[in-house]
Length: 212
Image 1 (spheres, rainbow, N blue to C red):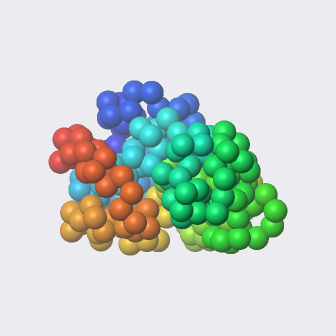
Image 2: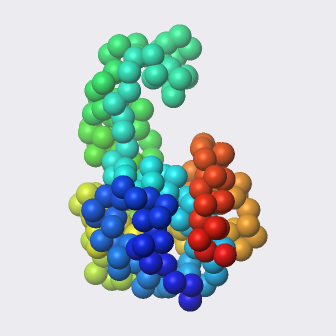
């Protein structure tokens, strides 16, 4: 197995949040368990995605505190001038925004689900369905894993955050995609699209410089 040390991670992310720091301090067993550390290439791809999604390990919760001019840029089909919603009604109001843009989809059915199941963690798990899936995936390996639907903040907690990301990685077939060194397909699997692809490429260059 390829070693992954906290000092290597901190070279890339010196401002790592304390819960993430603790997770990576004890992270070798996690990346071993999910076969991510079998090759340097897998580890480099995994960490490139994690570093992008988590803002170099500084972001625990999705930042939904958008200004009015920014909202139509991020959600052009929802907000004026193309969409039906007035950005001024949702600007700098993360809870109302999350419930509007995430409500009624991704398993978010009850009032408030959009905000409750907003993006969290190393790979920004989003939507109630994804929290339920994370619970199922993790319990295949660890039957004692918490129910993340009931306790969503455990997604960012030190004992679970790395395992949640690794379980999602494995479930989406990313080890094989990383073996092919195909960042486009890895990004598609993790993101569902190609958002931030260039930044992810840059992170991959940096992780490959450490794990090679």
